[in-house]
Length: 323
Image (tube, rainbow, N blue to C red; front, side, top):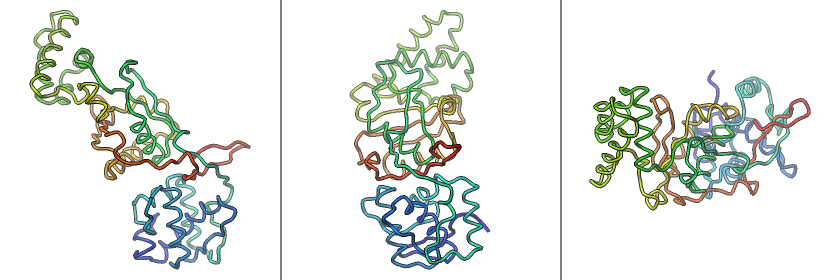
């Protein structure tokens, strides 16, 4: 029997017995955070108690201004319900489905757990290899990245590229071309190829001379209304749309609970919801990054730091640890 719900649960959902019970168990793990609330019955039967609990969770923990009271397989509400529970804990649900657990019995997920409130401020986005003058990513874009971190259960991401001058772009292209020219040709389009060709045709010259030739070509392309790289823009343009590379290896090196698949899926989700205007997964390419383009202040971000998001933590050896 597969883990997770197979069909929708809640208002207007298919509401199959097994799926409803799974959602009820997860809901009770969050209801347990509020001593004033009573757990809902984990009986597999849909009713107003369960639908109301779904709406309350959507409002407080998902940040939905208009909760619909429905949980869809792989939907945002279901991802938020389950994102902090590992495979072993999800196995407890499968075991509980074979037991009678009606009448408001305590969820198997709440046993041995304590909880705390945490928000986006507990997550971090750092820079690596970015000049001080290029650290101009907006607070809004930083918080969008933190939303992805939160959804993936990760604690830190690293920005490896933002805005670039023509000279910075030329230096990067030269450095990478010397490592693997063929890979760089695969990475860039025709405009970039014309810049790379200057390196290929002038290998006998010094790096400084080649960079100078490449800068002149990049400037020529820019004046013609095109770009060698999305990063080569004016400061004014960058303020209107932040272009960001999140380094795969740099993030992996500093992030607890690093999960590339979950993080990629979280970024895709934010793109579909309009927080990210463009996402390019380049983690398998030579530059190994997630490329993001974000328009600052396009959408409001829920203020999770005022306690609207509830994060479970494990109690291990007398200390708390965020899952």
